[in-house]
Length: 243
Image (tube, rainbow, N blue to C red):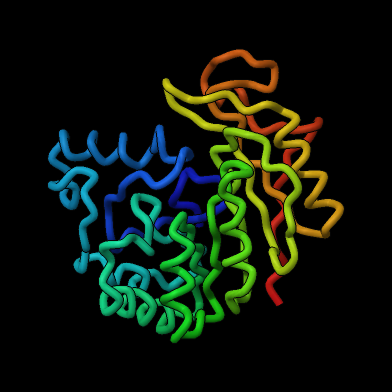
């Protein structure tokens, strides 16, 4: 089953929409561009554009899908946004607990809220928790993530806009790397991506190369599709082992 064009998931579920920028990786946010486009088209759920908005009518959507599915939660928002009420977040996780047939992948740039929320709650077994690490300046997020008791912990190194430097991948199970896409995309130096792959190999962590994005490995700007997903002569589609 494949409902999403995002290479590393199968479907998306957005119980909230909207967000705001918190670090350099947010500069050319694809979700912001898409939300404003959907607002202009009059699409239900995007009346507020990219303002953070609760979408309670979407809460039960995963319950209606019987086939086991891998969901990326909040592709159009951040589940741990500052304006997210914890009681609403509890409702999101209640749906997750009631649908153990599904796997739920969550990414955040707000590691402190992630830490606070789970300081008094357990992470369900069918949840994959992740943080975004777009450069060396944001790799402190990894230290927060590694200390949360989740079955799968992963990093989205996307958009990779600077070299990450040395990464401590202890207690991290999966790393996704990708370049930026869109008309204003910043180029990704191939050596930055190669360095992350080598570190994953050294530390026995699954590696997934999502895309080059708008800038190819040769430094030429073209369509994302034309640039493809080949890194060091192959596609990297490794996934973490679920024990």
